[in-house]
Length: 338
Image (tube, rainbow, N blue to C red; front, side, top):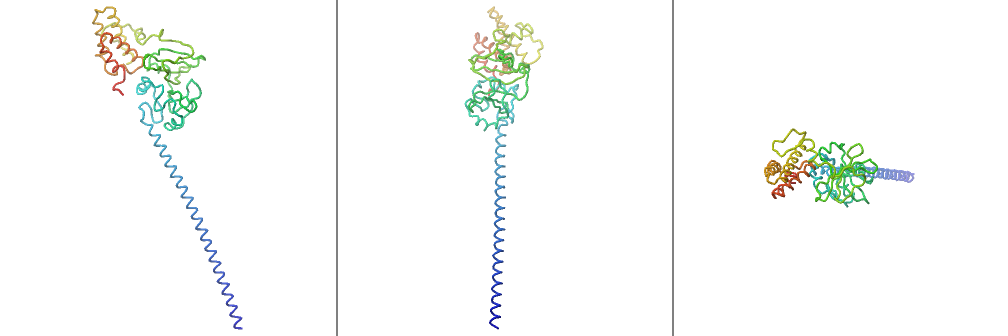
C-alpha cells in the first residue's frame, strides 16, 4: 500500500513539473514573440525617421539651390523673372552679343543641365518660331533633340509695343509675318557687332519675345519699314522741332530720351554747317562741346536708338579730331564699365 501511494505521488509530481515546464516554454515563447514584434516596430519607426530625415535634407538642398538664383544676375529676381525695361537688362542683353549665351544658358547645352540651374520648365514658351519651346522663368529655349538651339527672352510681365518703343527707340526694320499674326522690330544700328536684336509682337501689339540673330540672318514675311525709308532718330526729333547750331536751343522736351536726341540733332546740324563751310569753325566747336565737354561717360548709353545716333556723331567728329573716337566708347556705353 505504501509503495502504491509513493508511486502515485511520484506520478503527480512528474505531471506537475511537466506542466510547469510547458508553461515556462509558452511564457518564453510569448516573450520572444513580443520582443520580436517590438523590435520590428522599432525598425519600422527607425526606417520612417530615416526617410523623413532624408526628405528634409533633399528639400533643404533643393531650397538652397533655388535661393542661389536670387541675386545671381542683376536683371533677374529669385523666380527667374526679368524686367526687360530695366537698365540692368538692357545693358546686359541688348548691348552685347548674346546669340550663343545668356544667364548661364548656352546653345548646345543639354536641357537637363538647364534644369539643374533653373528647375523644371514652368510652361511652354510663347515664341513664334515653333512650338518646341520650354520656359525657365522669363527665358525660353528652343529644344532641339534635348539640346538648346536658340535662346529667347519671354517676359511674363505684359508689355505693349508703345511701352517698349519708348525705351528701346525706333527700329531699323519692321516686318510682318506671312499670316499677319506677328510684327517684328529689328534693331541693327551697329553693323560691326555681329548681331541684330529682334523683338516680336502679336497683331494686337502685345510683346511676345525677343532674341538675337547673326547680322546675316534674313527675316521672312513682308518688310513694312526699312532703315532706308524709316526716319532716323535724329530726323524724327528734328521733324518735331527745327534745330539750329546754337547753345541756346533747348525748348522743353517730354523726357530724357528726347533731350538726348535733341542734343544729337543739334550736334549733327552744327557738323552739317561746318562741312558746308569749313571756315565756320564755331559750328565745329559747338558740336564738340555738346558731345564731349557737355557730356559725361555713359551719357548716351540709356537707349539703343540714342546710343546708335550718338555713335555716328562721334564718328563724324573723329574725322576732324581723333580724340572724339577715344571718348566715344566711354560716352555711349554704360558707366562705370562692367
